Image (cartoon, rainbow, N blue to C red; front, side):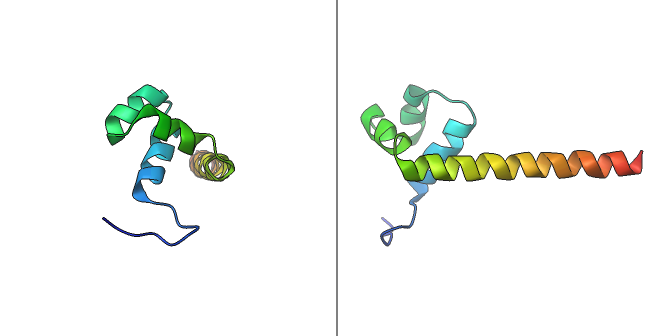
Length: 75
């Protein structure tokens, strides 16, 4: 199993984040990643998780805005 330095995010945490942003419930996420729901809840309720979720959502919003702007220029 890969070792991560303090401050780095493991693949598990990233996967939980992506599934959470997709709108999946914590029980669904736990089943999909093969972990206990308490582990998933523990990760979801950290300040670092909230920060990364916000960054990811803002990045998605920017991509959508730029796509619409590009299509508007072509019209």
